Image (tube, rainbow, N blue to C red; front, top):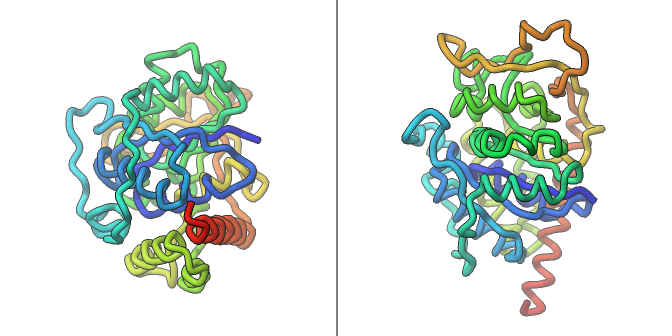
Amino acid sequence: MIKMILDLDTGIDDAMALAYAIGTKEAELIGVTGTFGNVYTEVGVQNVLNILNLCNENEVPVFAGASHAMYQDHFNRLEVSARIHGDNGVGQVAIETSPKEIQTKSAVDFLIESVKKYGKKLVIVPTGPLTNLALALKKAPEIKDMMGRVVLMGGALTVPGNVNQYTEANISQDPEAAKYVFESGIDVTMVGLDVTTRSILTKADTQSWRETGSVAGKTYADMVDYYISQHFEVEGCYLHDPSAAINAVHPEYFTMLPMHMTVITEGEAEGRTIGDPKKLRDPNPNVKVCIGVDSPALVKELNKTLLSLFQTVKVKEFSGN
């Protein structure tokens, strides 16, 4: 069984990735680190605590990380993020406040210690800006050769971005951090818009969660129905962050292109993820870019795992535990 850390800016699709990581039998979620992006860091980590409590997983530790990009001194949440995810980041759905508190250790230190403890068995899944991971690599460069896979949601190689024609939202929040991670030489899988927009979740899926009768199932259905309501171009919602979490467990669902990747950090194309022109002929590329996905298999895996989780939570709720 792999060990997994999620690095989230929670976010409704982050919440789906979190539920998948809790529910899958093929990975152990050893911790969650928080960052800025869809929401402010302090809001996102509280959302994680509340969701873990909702799903009866209070033993998973939560760590606060960066509150802004590496070379900036503040972060202002975008209006589009508030629209898509709601003011509270979870679709304006009220979730009971967790009795647990955020860990005093920083997210960066937790990442470093976890890599040193678990090595190649650890998979890190960032679904927001890559600031926490870049800061960990800068603070402890020796972990580079110890690390297992990093499966990130971000970027766009063969399709336009969703911020502008060049860049995807997570990468745009800290292009310098993304560039540092891509060029670090660690084992990176980029799960970008090339594949995340090919997998659609519908209200028929969320209705099945609601029908479990559990508070968790209803809460998630309400959250994702809100998210669906903000996707005007499809009858459903894209599975951005859950695709990365599923790739960490089932890479066989994806077609991947090995490349040396970099990120443009200035000018009109700032935030663009692209092949590194200096390394086009170099062997052993460290980044695998997802360019195809078995969407039916991915959606089935997500639904199966979340349904099982919500049904289990219902049993626990009825037993009084």
